[in-house]
Amino acid sequence: MSLPLAPALQYHFLKAQALLLLAAGKRAAALPRFARMLRLRPADPYALASRGHVQAQLQLTQEAIDSLRQLTAAWPRQAAGWFNLGYVLQQAGHHEEAGAAFERALALDPRLDRVWYGLALVRIHQQRWQEAAEALERNTALQPLGPYGWYRLAQVWLALGEPGKARKVIAHLRRFEPRVAAQLERENAEALQAGRASASEAGHAAR
Image (cartoon, rainbow, N blue to C red; front, side, top):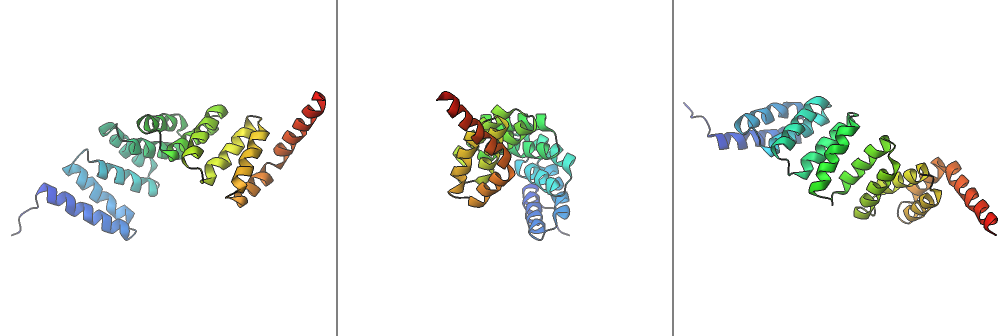
């Protein structure tokens, strides 16, 4: 008759099983392992974060939110937990709550470029354009070669009636992401052209 494993060994055995299942693409089968790990260690950050991540991948959105809320309640000083919660809330359309979660993450670690980008998307949805521009400027400063932040920043400058600033972003993008720059120009040709016309008219009026 075999003796039961000690709790610590049970935990590591379940963790190994979960990792093997995830490697095999069997996400749903991994979830009960995380549940059993949490019965052994109810506030375990690895199990809570992993369960929330897998639930989000399986589109179990409310379950993922619940797991990540548990994580941030148990470990409120972990910026990654707040970012992941904000991301899932944003994907679910809970923009106010997502913005608050992103702000909590940034209060803990303002160097997280992905959090600035997530916050910018929330502010764009809310049409808080100036705040979106500020968040995207922080994002692009931290991730200068990432095209997505620059792409969104150009769009936000246009929404703010600043086509000149949008053109500067496009010119910058053209140096390392010419396709994205060309896409921006195609999608916003009218607004960019209107900006050129306004600048030209202002120049004539000043003479």
